[in-house]
Image 1 (spheres, helix red, strand yellow):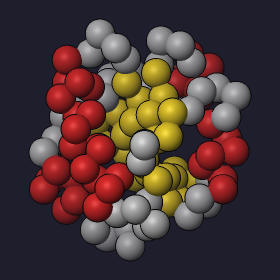
Image 2 (cartoon, helix red, strand yellow):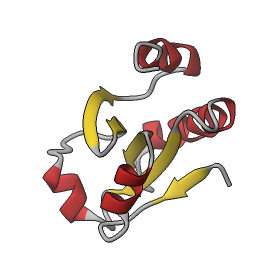
Image 3 (tube, rainbow, N blue to C red):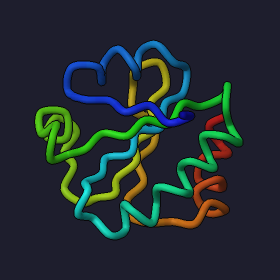
Image 4 (cartoon, rainbow, N blue to C red):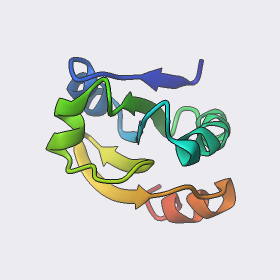
Length: 105
């Protein structure tokens, strides 16, 4: 699977071990999150080697969600070498997401 599932315990190791990591903060009950899932799967496949896509369930991992002030989901934060460099909120089609990410690499 191209998408990595992270939790409160593994989160820090995952974002620090990769150059670019897009973390999708989501929940199982969230409709827009479900719509975002196939977009992120395509993105992970298309950008393999350049960006890692990770998912963090905010209901199961409230510590990390709170640390980043996640108030609305889906929220996607792009990290570079462990530091947040871009935050995106809400559902977006793949083409729009790609335009938001293109200035990063």
